[in-house]
Image (cartoon, rainbow, N blue to C red; front, top):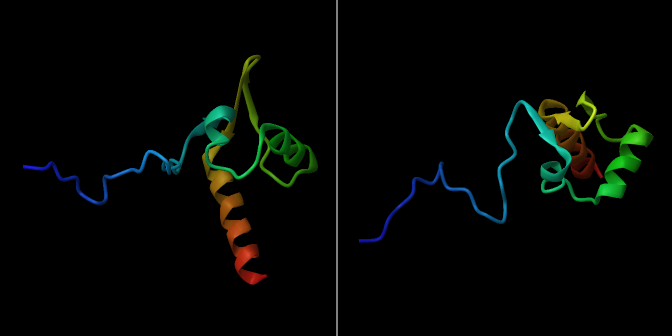
Length: 81
């Protein structure tokens, strides 16, 4: 008998789900945004993408709430165009 998975718990490996709250590091963030490392940092510098937070000397993260707000804003701009 085949195993079934409830539709609300299934996650496609090619389309991971971005958590709603918390922090995300750059490597994982780049799985969700449509640009490269260089473009991410250029947009941060231009203030067209949320600024990261330094948790320690070697740990930089983004607030997921700010990333979601940016995504919502980009979606609204795209729909308005």
